Length: 289
Length: 283
Image (cartoon, rainbow over all chains, first blue to last red; front, side, top):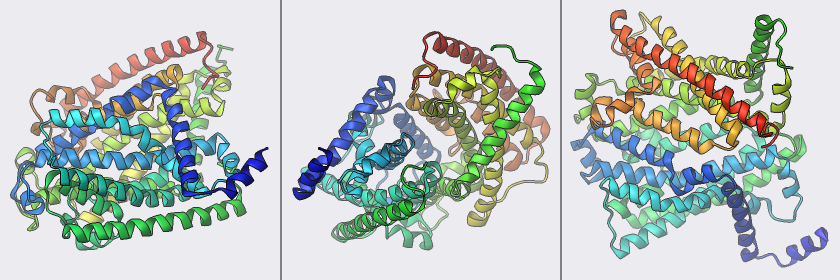
């Protein structure tokens, strides 16, 4: 029965069917999260840690205070809103990183990764489902985060064109970040220990993409790396759309660059998932952890 | 089963075995070395990047930081803060999740059937983590010096060892409490990270406590990391005398005692509830 349904799937495979698979994986992992109500409540419904981190960012901003230098770089004076919005944006994209680590490692340690890989589903589609799981689990937290930001005095530019641009940049950034995630996921499958890979990839990524500051403030050598990453344009574009900050390049060029690097990372991620999968199969198999 | 024959000597052997096991496990994953050096370096550099934004394109636009702290050496300020913060966060995660890991692997039940007191496993994890964090801290400071040119006052650095020891004690106490919670509720990552984020947010590792609203400042004082960061900065950044360190060490010692005693008591209680409910083997 398994083989027949597998063949049927292979014959009728389409973008929609693959999106359905991604959705099924997301749903399965969402149900697992809900299984631990205390954890779900404090992670998703009222994300306590995230709210505390926003407060931390406000404390950082208060330490530096309003400065001429800040206004010269960003074009705005509201440094608290800058800190709060930057952190909120970063937190949503971070959830994709965390999801990748958590979900893949969970499948590995529980021995289900091997079983999942024997299904006729394309490996990168399966991996994409795992990567996006935590992002969707974390999505409902947007209400609590918006409310807490509002209470901290943050007011956004809510004109229709700006809201539209926010959604557009967010969506393209999501695709670009998925590409980065597939690269990250393939390294976890290959090298196992996510904690180490996590720090190796996430921390430099936050530094180079300017999650909490404009990359214009980085040294030139760092900026060269920054311009190659989709999240740099995502963060910069989203801050422009929500707060009206200065951008690194004119907005239309920035969006073009975002589309370009997002596409490149997605393609690179798909290729790497395949390559590392082969390397794992030749070495010790998916069953090893 | 509850008797621990030849207790102290055997317990020390167990402690040694746990530490050895942990120290052997880390190098098993080659990327560990990168995670304790390069990754840590970047985490501190993120804050240096934020400071650079506030100092403007010229790099010398004044900020409030200088008036709050009396120094322009923000790189050293944040690197020292981060090392202590990471030390404590890592310890608490390692200790609490050592139990969760054993639960998921199915080895917790057998460990608890052995005559070794369960807290001994936790102490072992705490010691091994202290060793790992100390190695990491030295490497990160060297890398920080190479990348940012920050400078530290290292001529009389011996009191740092006392602070590290006290940090280990506090982490052990908090870790004991969370290990008990893990036993009881299994998946409590969100609660642990809430506590860790709370400590990170209020301990002032990247900001000056004086900068935050007065209403919040007393909260900072209840976290051991706040005092430890203060202590390590007093030695390595401000080069203060031993006499100035006494209040910091006294506060830290008091917090340690409270945390270890209450952590040990709560851990025992949670373990007993878990055992009575038959939840030891469940995950």
